[in-house]
Length: 262
Image 1: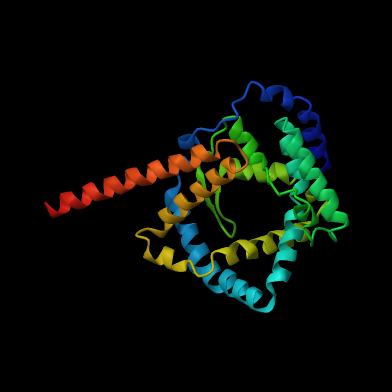
Image 2: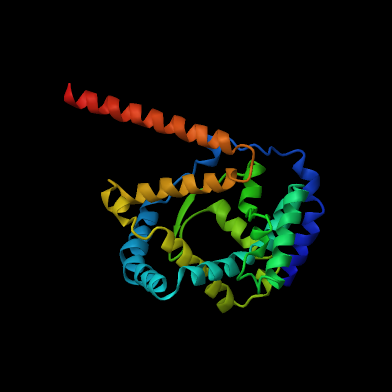
């Protein structure tokens, strides 16, 4: 792991020189497309994740977590977990020559890790320094690296190949590189509780979907595209494209309906 950190640090000297030659404006279609060459396998894993793991573990554990831990307590715990992402955000912004955003992330990490009691209190936000997560997956996207195939990973859920690679690189940064396997797993589990809590009560959307697998895949692609655009000047373009896509789909559905009743 230390060798990986060393190699990455050496690579960083060359990467900023490459940024000028790379596009920073992602194309909407490009950022929302993921191929699915192993769909049959992905579907089996999806059924296992949703019908077994979520039904008997994730959902019950999350419901108990929400019941026994107060809103303030859950917010503090989530702040603590997200604080571990700030160092990778510092480096990923530096790679793109986003010096101001890199400095903000460094300041956030410094303030919250000290005066914010290891990040449990987001004092930086109260000081007007908002959290703007930047992953290495997004960095790759801005260099026109495609998402690659869509993957449904056991336990972890939906991913793209680019996301897997980006997460691995983000894990090489301090302090993640110094955590043990069980410490990293604990952080991942707590973060998972927060994400599962956010969709509690939304299970009806899956139940009403004609194909829950396709529903989740498309929702994930939109979610990744949103994260890609949210910190960029292209956010308005992304929202406009979404509206155009929705209008087009509504028109197609209407035409299909009219054809059926003719």
